[in-house]
Length: 203
Image 1 (cartoon, rainbow, N blue to C red):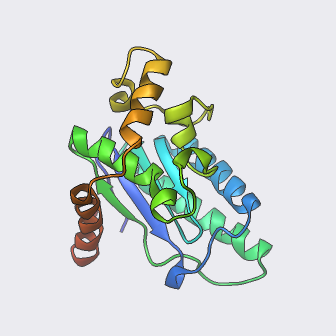
Image 2 (tube, helix red, strand yellow):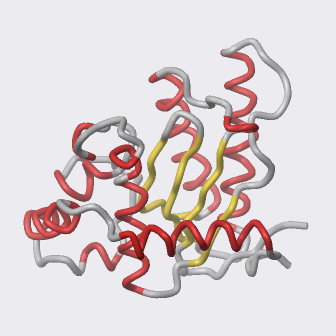
């Protein structure tokens, strides 16, 4: 049965490879994935605010315009990327570990916590020392003013300053420190709880 999400409310979306397999082997894999994400989001009316692509999984923060926008976006993205990945890497079968998980972000403070959680992921994984040096995330947009035309700046990010320079400086200052352990536990516990219960977004 199709999942339904609250229109206008952001969700933190997470999906990983089957049995923790590598699903992004090369730069071209990441480039194709982002192109497919842009197309699916535009086609189905989903605003993507943040992303990070890791080797075995990815995170998104996205807001649907209708109850089925996000589910339709993820269905198209998952199917198209699977077909691409299997052709390129000469394999068959699923690449995903079941269904993607998505958690509504209903609190303003928690939205910004999740933004930091997503974009600091490569640092926590010890892939880089600074999120600014990691190519496959939206940190460069929020902190450095890099241009990704299809990425939609969320109102809570925009509230960090009156100008682009002010917002970027404020976000860099926020991200200069790692997320407190309590916030990390909260985000991770949400995913554990989600695995054990029926999702609120599912009907």
